[in-house]
Amino acid sequence: MEHLSHKEKIAIMIAIIAAMFFAAVNQTIVGNALPKIVSELGGLDYYSWVFTIYMLTSSITTILAGKLSDIYGRKPFIIIGIIIFSIGALLAGTSKDIFQLIAYRGFQGLGAGLIMSAAFTAVGDLFAPRERGKWQGAMSAVFGVSSVFGPTLGGYIVDNLEWKWVFWVFLPLGIVALVLISKLYPSKQKSQGEKVDYIGSLFLTSTIVFTLLGFSWAGTKYDWDSTQIIGLFGAAIVSLMIFIFVERKATSPILPLFLFKNGIFTISNVIGFVIGVSMFGGVMYVPYFIQGVLGYSATHSSFLTMSMTLGLVFASAIGGQIITKTGKYKIQAIIGLCISTLGLFLLSTMDKETSQYLLVFYMVLVGFGLGIGMTVFTLTVQNAVDQKYLGVATASSQLFRSVGGTVGVAIMGTVLNSRMKEKMIELTQHAKSSNAAVPPEVAGKLEALKNPQLLLNHEKLHEIKATLPAEIVPLFDKMFAFLQDALTFALSGVFIFVTFTMLVAVVLTFFLKEVPLRSAAERVAKSKVS
Image (spheres, rainbow, N blue to C red):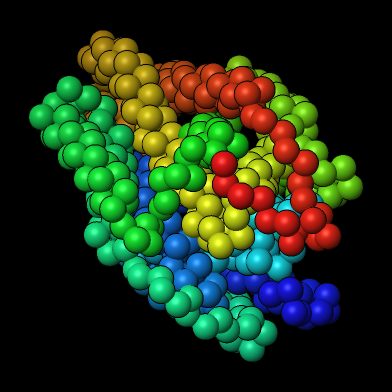
């Protein structure tokens, strides 16, 4: 797109940012609203699957769209992605139970993968590597802004309106984004001599699906050493071996294996995977802590979590400008990830006595660190490959991060459930000994406190407490406090896990070779993949 004027490039970026904001805000609006939605639909055991299925389906389409957009151009995939995502959002609002919600969120994920893959790659098409820093920062800021508006609005909707509007409120924005992309984004002629690698696509998809299902079900639906889990991981390994064999023979592979011979490409993607594993701990489970342990409403929760995204927005803007001016990034990535590691560790120290001001400080640290460090690794991947592989390289970066997020959520779900179960055994024993002294009908109401999902339904808790005899209320308060402690114990384990994971990302970054980012003048030289 070198023939485009600067003004035309800016117009295209406005269209891309509109499409990205539509996808991002529809994703973030669910964060604080989901605990309330799950309390109405039921299915706390499947809570993480609302995120997992979205990551799984978006991961699949991300890598497929990366290669196909190198052949056919970015425009058709952004348009198709917007249409699929909009339909998924419309259907999600009609969900009657948790399983329908999971299915529709999975459909949304297909569209999200198409949008994000093509959008991030378009920045590489339009600008030289050194100039991409500020635009990558701007696009990260789009996620940050959506994370400010989304959760806040989502919390307000579930507190004051029907929860279906969480999914429907931004559908008009999808129409606007669709029109802008159609009008402003230039079309591209199909690359001659390029064939679609259908067989490679099939086995790459099966590898991703089997791997993510294995991690998602292990420790929750099935034991880690069960036949089902071993079978899934075995199928993933077989699919991967076939995929590697097919890619070596393919004339136009969906994911060229020689790219992994480039050390910068490989280690950047590994770091992206590790960051994906850890970053979703803050995104997914902090609202759970705020609403379940601290007892705040979804609306109040959204205002608190806003601090993390404000830190991310501010740091992304600053970090992008620094990269553009200096052309260097390694020390910035190390500092950013170290700050995030500290913030995640501090989250693991929280309990029901933690003040909301301290919580905000911890989340600002996490967000600020991610804003400085996370966007670096998309730039390093793009800078490491030839221009004609830009789409598949950018998609691989997003794929590794998304798969990392899915694996992380699955492992965190296992950690949460196992630690919660450990504490709930104590609560059950305590309830049995206490209930012996109360009437059977009252004991039945106290039995409801064994369900940790009740912590997310504040109205139900007040309703139960209001119907209890005065002499039983102290026992209710004691059991309620125990339930809060159990959830705190479980979430602390989750935050400790993501702290150690982020620490691994810090260590790996020290091994990243720093190659100065090319400027527009140097772009014509096009570095070859080593």
